Amino acid sequence: MIEIDFFIAWRNLSLGSWEVMKIRGIPLRIHPSWFLVFLYFTLSAKDQFETILDGQGSMWNGWVIGAVTSSLLFLSVLLHELAHSFVAIGEGLKVRDITLFFLGGMANLERECPTSKGSLKIAISGPVVSLLLAFLMIFLSNNLLVSNFMLSNLFKEVGSLNLVIGAFNLLPIIPLDGGVILKSIIWHFTGSKRAGLKVAIASARLISFLAIFIGILNLIRGDLYIAICFSIIGLFIFSSSKSQSQIIKIQKILSELNVNQVCSRSYRVLEDDLPVKVLSKYNIINKENVFNEEWILLCREGRWVGYVNEKILQNISVQNWDKKFLYEFSFPINKLPSISEKEPLWKAILKIERINDGRLLVLSVSGLPIGTLDRVDIGKAVLNKIGLNLPDQLIKIARKENIYPLGLNLYNIVQSMGSGDLEEDQ
Image (cartoon, rainbow, N blue to C red; front, side, top):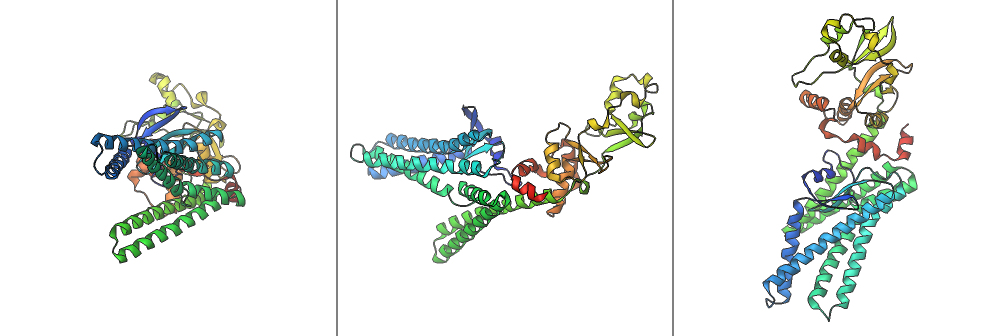
């Protein structure tokens, strides 16, 4: 099971995958890279079969044994991910899909488990299933040794693969199951999810340095293949831990920055006794043929009295634009989604994701409008804090599509913050 990443979310693998079936309502998807793994294990098992029989067996038998071995491996990985999924469902979480790809599989949860015990149960369920399958296969292999040598060898191979899958996933490395288990245990005893993640990241980095060191030692000894393998593994683990560190940094930023430090001003203020014709100058079509809509707030003698929508012009004939007045179409200003200027950004993200417009009216301590806040405002602030200034063109694209710049999934990052961490940050 894989946790959220920084710029590249693992769950995006499903975008290039094919849905093959549904299991209890959970879509099962296969990424094209999985077929390379299937072919590799098929050829490996075929070659081993032919070696054992010293060329005396049928060529077709070798291909059949190879395909069956790969199919059982496929089933083993699927059962591993189904264990994660069913336990997650038991914890009240929704599973978007399961994707099998070249590194194994991934159960894509709608959100992270809000409790440390639930997170631990979800994470440990997959390796437990893999290890149980390993022991079952090895047991069958030992008991079939005399009666059916080839079937015994098949079970032994699949059992060994499950043992590797289970043991590898228990390594205390984020984003592997072992890293999530370590995070959940620390989270449980400290009450801080962030503390658990920090320990898991430190563990991953230690293992990454150890893997790179082993790679260097093997390079000195002249074993280039082993050196390359350990170096790649070490760099992959280090890159993943660095990605998780970025998540912690973003969570800290979202907790420390208040709305008034980030908001912009995407509204206009008009007197409510003006004719609706005044809206025609703001109802401008931009180059992409999309309405450049701003909130139109109304005031009367210095008091805020409501707001109107530009689209009212579409329902009134041009001849009546001078005869109709803004106050006739006014809505109470408290109907607009709003947030206090002193609220932290993570609260603004939760509010923004619950509304269709994706924009909030920012109110002062006294309850008066002082600005607006949308996904682009928040994304720009976060990226600036981590030292990344985006060009204007990217900002325009993000604002047009009403998304966080660079595809930042800040909503998931906020959801991954434990309740203890949120209480600490307030």
